[in-house]
Length: 127
Image (cartoon, rainbow, N blue to C red; front, side, top):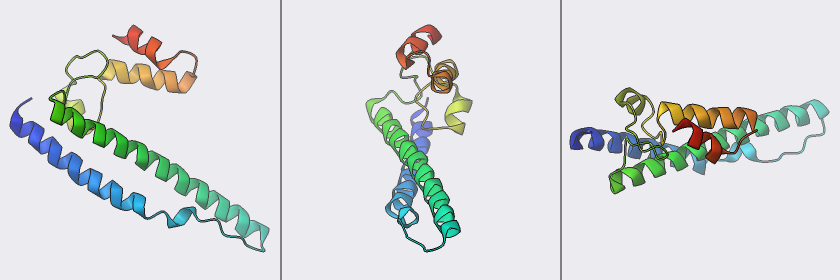
């Protein structure tokens, strides 16, 4: 990967990082409000649950972006953190914060879906 491409991805990641950090500061939707109406309580709980899920997803994304920025600084950006093979340019363009190549990512996804094998075992088998 060329220095120009890496700088382009670094700019994209830094912009996304700033955007997510701003969003995560605004967590008003998680407040617990009491209501005398049971239906309002249920609706508030559902909205709060959705806000928590979004916060969790965005926090995970922010951690992944920060890790990608560290990989840029270390000179390992675009290389799978598990098998150390180059990540395809199309994948990096689509998901610049990805730490895994397609094969390792599929193993991670399967592990999360089934919960049967440990992540380390699946990654060993994927590589």
